[in-house]
Amino acid sequence: MDKFLKILDFVLVIAAIVLAVYVGKNIGLEYLMRGKEEPVTLSMTEGGLPEDYIGRPAGGDIPLIEDGHSWEEAWATDYITIQPVGIISTGVGALHPWVDAYTTPTRRNRGGWKAPVITNTALDVFNEYGEFYLLQLPDESYILAQLPMEEARKLKMGKEITLPVGRKIPLNMQAKGSLDGICYEYDVPMDDVFYCINDKWNDSHEFGLFLLRIAIAVLVLFSFGTAFIMLAEKIFKREKK
Image 1 (cartoon, rainbow, N blue to C red):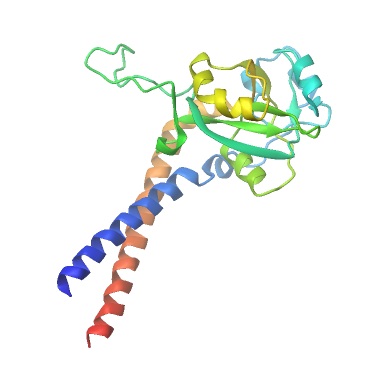
Image 2: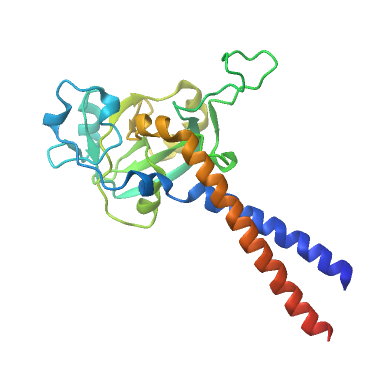
């Protein structure tokens, strides 16, 4: 019985670690920290820089992309938004622009390690990659998009939302090979991506968010790990008696 309890304790600790990583990775800290933001209108964007508006809530006069034709007609300089009717995960992610790809401060790879530009998002423990999604437009066509994690979660739950202000950006060439199959299946154009992540805010809060996620993961690990083990010991001690 003692040997079984030791094995059980090990399994429960592993389960607690998995749970801690999942919670630390997926909790929507960005929205808790950013709070309610003023919607962006077209008049606000005149003369401003794209990084000042991309990823912020879209005002009522921001052009809405409702079909494949309007997506094709949109320019890379246009501020646009989307109200998707569906979302499909691809499992493919690109390294966020604010994440340093190198382990060395000189950005040289001598003796260091360079993070891959494209990866399977299941391996992205620290939220360093922005997943590519297929967004279904009201005309049932699909486009590629990178969007904040919280918006993706809401869409997967079937909620109707308006995405933040975004723009067309070229698809990373290294991602094309990984996305070929699913884009062919859903007849998705692969030239451009709808990008609506607030790079400027994430860049300035990256380290703070990292520390908060680590702290939450550690708290979950110790809380649930202890609870799992105590519960198991209580159950099996009763059975032993």
